[in-house]
Image (cartoon, one colour):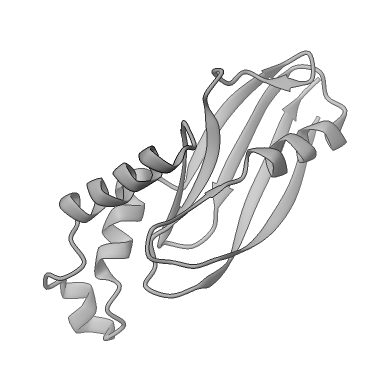
Length: 138
């Protein structure tokens, strides 16, 4: 069986790290599937999804790491094309990726003790984000 649901979120942009674990757990519970996989996918090209230990120090570290990898204050051809100033957001999102797949067993996602699912919004302004949660299993 395959069940697809959407989660709507408001984000602040500028590398906003949002813990969405509870949202995904809720959709998994609603599916009433015992074993399988859950795919978490963010639509749009300036946000990504991953897992981290969601604590303040690591959230700061992630923001600083992305600033080192794809700095905000340098020239990007995308900015010249569209004039929206968010070229760095697209680079960061493409490096992180738009989706992850998590197995689940006995109605529970197989996550490490300190592992949470996060959405990172890299855009240069607040956004309304849609996250697709697709549960496949038996």
